[in-house]
Image (tube, rainbow, N blue to C red; front, side, top):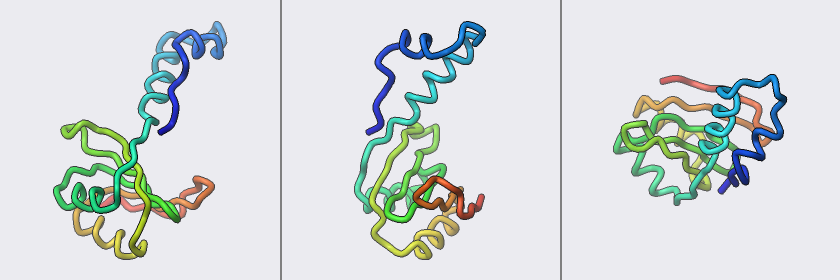
Length: 113
């Protein structure tokens, strides 16, 4: 799980005085949304088949995904255990937005189904 900032004061001290309160709040929100829980791959597949998943990021050895807002919008991560092509076919069949990324975070391609 990605860690949170120690306190709001830490974030504020890192921002210049010219930054608005909105910028600070958005930074804190972004830090909180980066918190990712781990699930097993079968759970991920179940969520996909039950139409609970909003978007997916496919990396070489892992998959990051977010549930739809009506199901909590949480972010999860799992180890990829099936070929990328099979996963892409499944996501397409379920009309789920996904992005394929390399290990450096560069986008290798995407599709909004």
